Figure 1 (cartoon, helix red, strand yellow):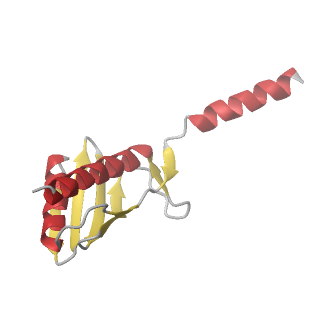
Figure 2: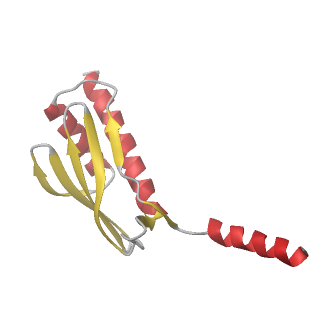
Figure 3: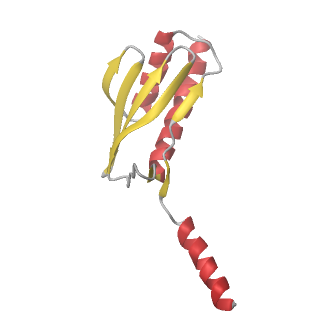
Length: 128
């Protein structure tokens, strides 16, 4: 019985150390009403503040990438005046698995931090 308990504890310990998580795609409705231009500005400012590089920009869509040490992530951000979506596009050295829809946990952290900054900028745009 001790061996079974020990084996289960070790299994949970190893599983908890996994760096892969399901890919987080932000799909956010902004709680304030702003113009499309103000939303675009909020997104661009957030990207630059968080050190993302804008790769392409068109009406309602921005493609951006970030390089952190040896890791690279690329996202597509679609938006209008009321909402925005940040969707995974590509990556290098982030253990991405399209079959399991998983990626290194740092990617999810970067996306959540970016979304928080976009929300903050959108809120600030409303108060101006």
